[in-house]
Length: 375
Image (cartoon, rainbow, N blue to C red; front, top):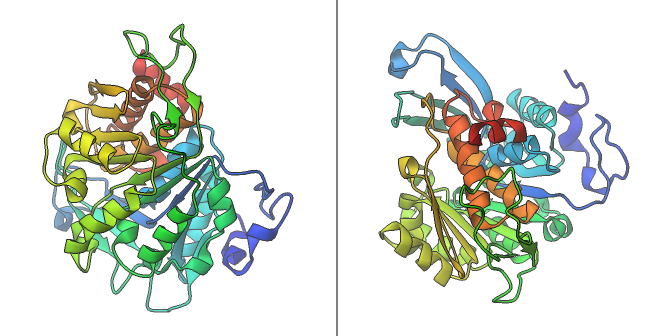
């Protein structure tokens, strides 16, 4: 137990230098990854293949898409933080402690003062390989939807090597305006310098696409900061779902990378086949479009070309955290300066590993585990 964590929401840690009270470094060096969006407590059934009414026991873990991506990036060795908000309840300290235990800086996990707003809890049913219905407890409103401009450290957001936002963060106010304000604070590389999300794509990887080995060519070079918008669409969380498309396009106007599955991409650009969908995302101004294709792998497109990587065969246990694991590993490849194929092979393998496990945040793999999966 970290006894200092329950009091963190009362302290403005962004202005503290040196080491934090729990040993987390609070210096001024830019973060590798800052994510912004949902947080929650996942309660996943330990009995697989039965409806919730028949479940006897649950496993508790940290959850929420943006939170999971921050954890995934931290597990891969990156200095990460998440901007989110919890309720003034016992799950708030749990969230902060869990983040710290995963190596994610919790300084921007705020506490909503409204006693009616509780830290969200999420249940699911597990019917492998592809049916995992979710039951969200986020009423009357989730605290993370109350993120406000005053909760932002715009200097830290602008300085981060990679900043990650989500479509769910646009689903309600004031989170919607706050997310767009955070995106507007990001430096935007001049058109034509991106290549793959603020990176210059130089040439394909080796025929195997093995991210463990250099390909014998110059590495991909970073041309500027990376801003990722994860389309992350949950229709049930929108008060006005018709607004989702225009808002997604507005957010993508600030991003260098777009990521989503086909149905999420369709929210932004309409129903299309994968290549056309990726091209439509590029037309909105991003430099790297990543379209998750489930059992068909992942497609990536830059202004220089297209690559599709096949799935990594696994026995699926729970697919719910796979996309977030892919997201954290995508951050890893982008920050490492890898080319698109190498990045997507690594990210795809990370997602497959989590699909073979029960939890989300607790299941995020290390670099060595991803490398083993690619052997």
